[in-house]
Image (tube, rainbow, N blue to C red; front, side, top):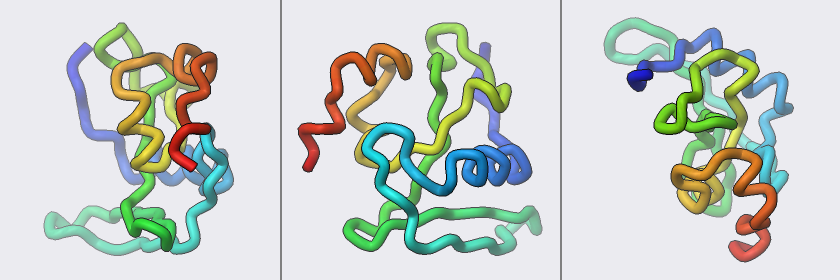
Length: 103
């Protein structure tokens, strides 16, 4: 499956479902910005004050391993956890508990 853009509506649904919190380390977004992008399309960004990096939409099963952009395969993830997770699946990452090492 090829990588495609995840729509504003789908991102907002996932962020709200996960209560604006990283599913791995449980860090909660402190700032939620909704704005209009250059193309006129809406954009939603979640930020946390300790690094100001935006939260990301992560895939339980990565696209590279056959995952999809269906809502049930999408999760809210902070940038640090998503970087550590790389191409592991949700299940592999949770098993290794790597987010505990970022303190």
